[in-house]
Length: 155
Image 1 (tube, rainbow, N blue to C red):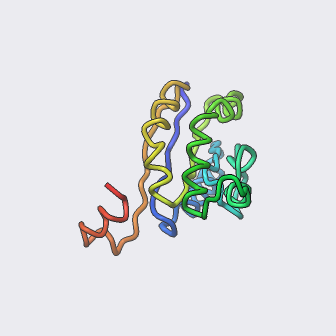
Image 2 (cartoon, rainbow, N blue to C red):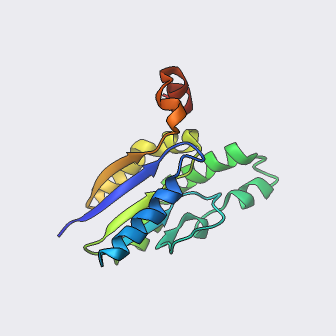
Image 3 (cartoon, rainbow, N blue to C red):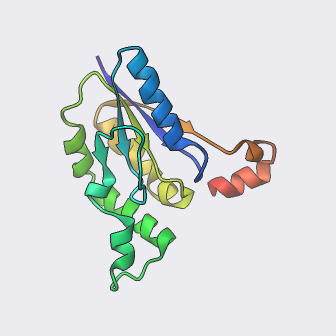
């Protein structure tokens, strides 16, 4: 049976982590297995267990404190995502033992950080044999304003 994955993406505050939490609870009620991978190096708290956490590889706070890099929060997040893309073997090792599971990838809320590495994620996940689906969460107020949604997603 193949492994399945969802990339849960959207702007900050759109409910990505809440969605992951709800999916974990729903799966548990059905006696099914759902694993969550945190891809947000700035995340601080989870109401669900994470199978793999990018903060084990790199953290935004560490990047921002490095005087040689001189990044703020946004630049630090972009740097972390590029670092992750260049060290993808960490995730492959973390997922190596997962079989017949459904994996949710909780992505960072800053669209610029994800957009820069988005194509790489698809390629890597495809190569790892996961059937992928993208779940994009948006603020409802943006749905009625096409221009605002385009700006928010940095299309």
